[in-house]
Image (cartoon, rainbow, N blue to C red; front, top):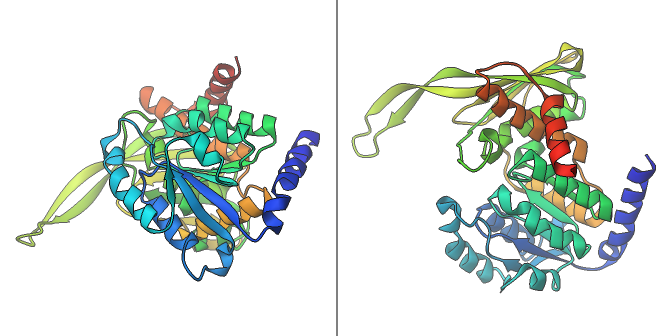
Length: 342
């Protein structure tokens, strides 16, 4: 309790100058995701939207992922586009930190996040870490431990957390959620646990409405019929494909299920009704929350919830390795904590 209070007080003191100043200078690490274009377009617009007033992206360090072609191939194009919106490109993270007050860590590759965020924390710069927070659960623990130790706030989230319907349920619109299901694409990247790379979107929506308290998960597959249309002939072709599905059991017997799908969506059932959840409502709702975080030093997502989300996804991989057996989050968390803090 005392440590948490000191963390908030320290963060608030750190940011009091920023909050009262006319402008907050923001920097970007990693120009290999489309998120940077969306954020820069909104923050550097003239005039600015009221929700982001006074926060400008002024500098960027381009290097993000080092060996993922789908990411590295984007860097030249995205570099030129953010330069055209008034962002200075700098050759190192340390030079970036000399020019900014806060940081967007946007590198697509979660494996580089630990080494990239530590200089920011050491320089007393609050950081928003785009998904995934790290390439492993162990690194996620190390990042959040470093943040707490230095009393420098960080947080990580998918944009799906801030969908209008999802936030309404989070706020109690249908009472306590007893059961929920979400879906999102879940393309895989071989260097990351399966759901870290893209399934995080649907998993984040699930945890937004279910909250913490997940005890165990079981992973399986479901079959889905997919229709594709030939661009030339316009002929439709139907095929059945296998999709990832992961079911978690929460305290009190509540259940939440994530399923891989082509689109985004889901449903939550509470003790006062049910509601649609899991929709993608653009990047601005996330950006508004990040700006509020930079102004106040208060993260909209607790470190405990973030770690449980990534433990859920790590446990899903372990369940896969065990042929679909049930795996407890405590087991994977205990193992990761021991490795992170040894």
